[in-house]
Amino acid sequence: MLLYIFSDIVLFFGRFHPLVVHLPIGFLLLAGIMELVSKKPKYKALQDAIPFTLLLGAISAFVACMFGFMLSTDGGYNTETLNLHQWMGILLTIAAATAYLIKTNLLELPPKAYLGMLVTTMALIGVTGHLGGNLTHGSTYLTQHLPDPVKKIAGIEVQEAYERREIKNLDSALVFNDVILPMMKMRCTNCHNEDKMKGDLLLTSFDGMMQGGKEGNTIVSGDPIKSELYHRITLSHSDDDFMPPEGKTPLSEDQVEIIKWWIENGAENEKLISEVELTEEQRKLIAIEVGVEPEQGATVLPAMNVAKASDETINQVSNKGFYVAQIAEDVPFVDVRGYAGKLEINELLQIKEQVLWLNLSETGITDETLEVVAQLPNLMRLRIEKNSITDDGLKHLGNLQHLEYLNLYGTQVTDDGLKHLEQLSKLKKLYLWQTSVSNEAIEKLKTKLPNLTVIKGTIDTDAQKS
Ligand code: HEC
Image (tube, rainbow, N blue to C red; front, top):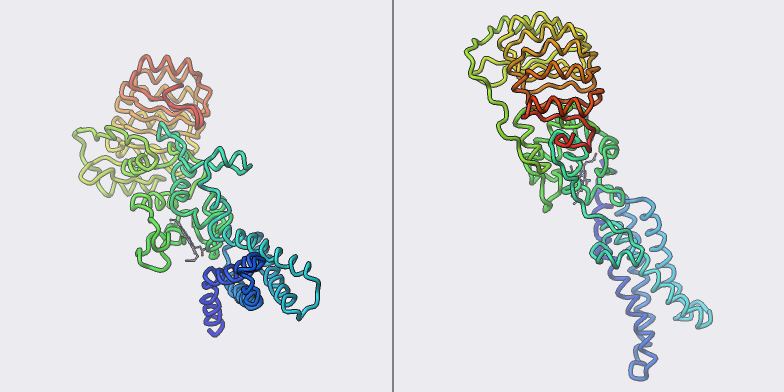
């Protein structure tokens, strides 16, 4: 307990350091100026005031050192710069005190030594002050607004102003680099960067975020509530712990919502938007955030006369390796996700009319499974990426007349398989990365299905270009 009070008091005084440092700077510069101008007969009288001014300078420099040391216990500064700043400050204090001692003849040394000490003191004021500035404002603070050409001549690295990568297609955006990181750069990295790691937390990179701050639990993958970062951005804005601190522009509600989604879904680094599960609402939020037009005409639920499945049936299917969720209130349709190793695909036929969306990605299914999938007459979205699916499997899918979305990423599908998709007149999106399908085959399919967008390349290949 006592220790806490003590460390609080230490910090209380420490915070005065940035204020107090101006005293030695003022006194010592004044001593230097007086030494200069007193060479003129008119100002000769100033000589008498120099020892006293030097003394004030040395004492206040000592006090500034003490306060500075107290402030450094707060942590969160670049240790290299901090060390250098600290030693320069101590040298400065010694130099100022020595200059005083020589000036007053308490230390008998030739006048040249005095002059040397005085010049050293002035130089150290510049160096120490500059390093201190870097600690508080970051090392690029001073030169930040120099015009770029001047920077180049002076050999200063021209820092690109932060601009997000232009994204043409939401699906090709990277979850971390294009969605999460830009928010940090806009609102957080002023204080959480390499030079100034407040709370020992680096928010300029994925690794920094995962490493976390003092508490280490900055991001707890899958659990926003346990994640310190999410906790800090959802506190009341007047709370002392709220991030960003008082006076800084907070993240928008939508941004907070996106961060929550990101953490909940495993805080992914390299995944693309098209590889993650998103509701229409979330897609819209993210589209706005990364600056692409929200997609028009998101899912229009079919107006088919289908009865709702009973809770009992839904439960039965759920017990056979599926997660079944109603798509919206008051509609009979369901969104189904299969679990690897457990799913008994035939069970789906119990709700075959109700299944609208089906996600069987990475579940180890094979071509035979698709024979059953083909019996879901109203299926609109099918995700079967990252499974051992071949052209043989695709031949079953030709009957799915409502299919709009098909993800075949990371399957063994080839050009031959695409032929089976030609009858899918509603198909709007087809994902084909990491398949051996050729561009020619895609072009051919597109002549049959003019509304189709194929997403094939990696990040940089835009869907439309393929
Ligand atoms: C004006 C400077 C400043 C800005 C801007 C800022 N922070 Fe902080 N942050 C701090 C300081 C100072 C601390 C350490 C004191 C504390 O824990 O409250 C801190 C601590 C934290 C911690 C706790 C680290 C730990 O483990 O103890 C998290 C998490 C955090 N900030 C997240 C953020 C996020 C997210 C943003 C952007 C929305 C942000 N900060 C913006 C100054 C800032």
